[in-house]
Length: 151
Image (cartoon, rainbow, N blue to C red; front, side, top):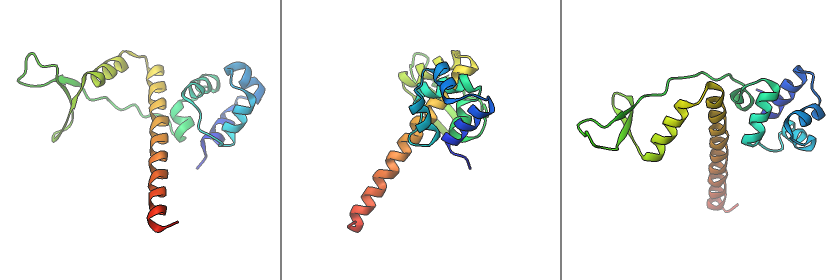
């Protein structure tokens, strides 16, 4: 399994670009690019977008090594039996329903108005945020276990 840095390097070399070429095309410093390629840190959302455009790859591929599989987004529906309600829900499965607040409705409606490229950018950004969240939660869990063990 390749890392994010390895995938960035692979895409750069496949396009026969140097770090300096990428710097000139994206505005990212060569030092920053080198650290990304050596997995010193995760790329920011703006770096992901710049690399995606320059290297002609998807953000999903940079982050996971897999191409996006565009699934369908469940429909937003007004709550039944409530003509004047501002409550909307997503029906994910027969037995699962989520009530959406105004922010969530606005985000989903805005997302639907975006072209496919912008949708992929947003999804890539969310993947990065989730990875950072999961990494932080895992580190906190490890720290907690170490404290419990007296380490």
